[in-house]
Length: 385
Ligand SMILES: *Cc1c(COP(=O)(O)O)cnc(C)c1O
Image (tube, rainbow, N blue to C red; front, side, top):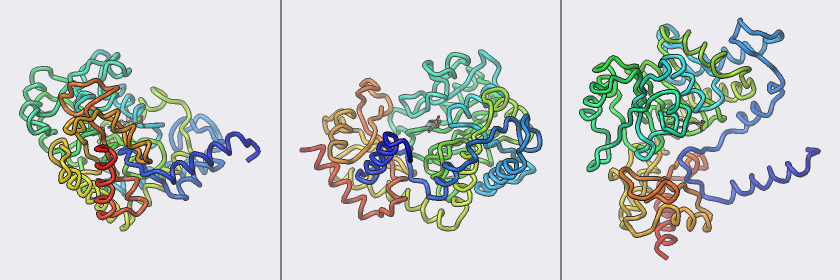
């Protein structure tokens, strides 16, 4: 690189990434092939529109790339072109979700989503997000005792509020979601069911977590979490809704798609369709469960009593330490986590009662259950010292 300043910083970040234990649940490590696609000359091309219908010339190669990404997206989740449409242009998870609402919910309409402090995402209608300003959030949470979703409570709320769309999918919910029951909740009030599987997409692709496609009208996902691809998002829609979705992504939300990123998505989806990815997805969950169990053995309360996914929430206040302090102390010892609210948290988001741990990244780096047990012991020692 001629730009020595930036080159030095890239090197420094690479070194940092190598030197830490990374338990951030939303991060992962992409393959060299994904990096190659991202860093390719595809970034030079403008391609507003869709394959076969672009507003610029010179797209004969780019069309093939986007079509391949779409094909691979369907294949990775075992979907038929007859019933599912797919859009690979969203620049990231947040704009993908906004595009869905733009397509399907009238301005001022109601979006029923999990509140942020119970494990929802900002783009599920939180008031600081555009999704809470243009649309009205009907917030739901988890049961205070079980810390799991109570579908009967959701159904009562849905019948009372009659939302246009229900979002199922979370950033900090460690348990399996009963997609069938979610669909029943949506049907009870005639709402569209949108599953935001951003966190768990890789687990679904690897067959280690129940697929939502049998019950959802729309499925959105980021590509960069458990799916282990570049920062990007995909929207799947039942074919009768796909035209509206495509129009909302472009020209509704975005201009030209990032073709280098779409090529990276295609590479990641091929990797996720490989038999080895099944083993990876299973190992991610086994590692999270081993980590949770050992922390429990050492006296830490795990929200909902454990995990069925790649992530767990540790109630650090159960040992008298706040989430922020826990996160800071771990970071000073080279373990990177994020502080997180726990359901019904009495503390504030900037200094909540817990931390969120995820195993997707460290599993990519080859870690197994025994490493997780050792890691739990290290975490325990750091936090109790
Ligand atoms: C990460 C995430 C998003 C947002 O993705 P960005 O790429 O950060 O915009 C949306 N929804 C859920 C559930 C997520 O976990």
